[in-house]
Length: 156
Image 1 (cartoon, rainbow, N blue to C red):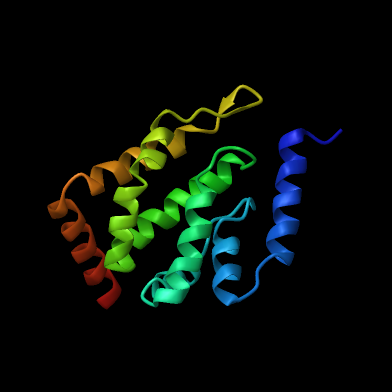
Image 2 (image 1 turned 120 degrees about the vertical axis):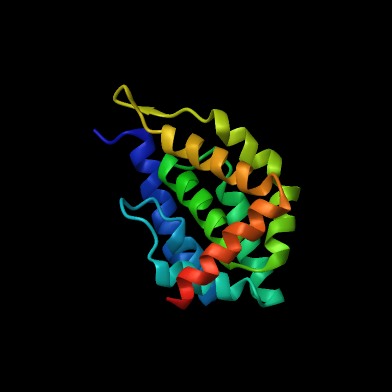
């Protein structure tokens, strides 16, 4: 018998396949899917490139911040949203950092995230990722250091 979580994941996957109106939405929905694998670096890079364009930035930002809502989302989707946030802090538009600071309450809330599946704590990765993002955003020096490291890695 399917679990409620499994049915919600299936519904989210179907909605993500049929909902996107453009390539930007499609990329973000794919990055935030509840599938068992993470988004490719190529996909994350394309989303970071989209964040440099005002119209595409707004589309991806709206979907991303909704992706952090715990209601109706699997732990995988929340973790993937945090992974995308971390990637965009390092590689995306500078204005994304300001958005992160404006939405810091959503990220901080996830430092206490709990999700158990068959008595296994599936929320630990989410808690750790949220703590890591809060630490990066805690100072401009941390942000600059992370962006510099990312730039150096890209150039290799």
